[in-house]
Image (cartoon, rainbow, N blue to C red; front, side, top):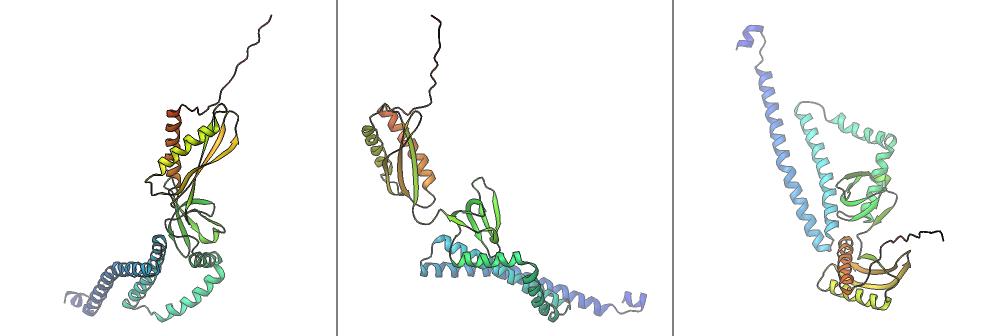
Length: 280
């Protein structure tokens, strides 16, 4: 060969060895690329079957599915790295032995990480939040997109994605457990007949609720809530499905406003009275 004649060194074994290593690496990467999506589909299928058997909510199934996906991905990447190191001839034994030492170092040095994992474990075990729940956690509110062992992801109503370390979640307010309350306050003029107004609004509420599957109970006019500077405030309450309360409130206000306009009932607005003094 040319290299042997030029330097007197036989490079053929090295070239063959390098080609063999490259081919093995390519095969491992291809296998990883095939196994990863297959594993995710299997996990999804298992979670779906177990969830249906255990009658888990959709949010709970999504929570478990994403958590197991994360754990599966971490394990797969760890196996990939170890396999590649073995192919290139780097001893695996010391690395695996060092993993225990590294874990011990993390337990002492990365107390925040450990706290995140412990807190995340109890959040999942106690089912405090699930994916698609509307919650207030860590001083932020939004829709839960993912619950992990280290962080929880919340999507704010403006589209912002918040990453909250689990150790910062000391209190959780979950607005998506059971039926939710839609609350509407309407101001009516002091000059109106309250009994008549309440009757008109209740008829509007009954018509609004007809055929609306979002509403589980009501809406009902519960009576006078307060006295304002220029209006008497009436309160209307309804029970709705999770996450539907805000939409119901907006549409109910519109329906009540249209009904009051048709009935000629005044919704007051601030007035200013000017008194001009004149000299006799």
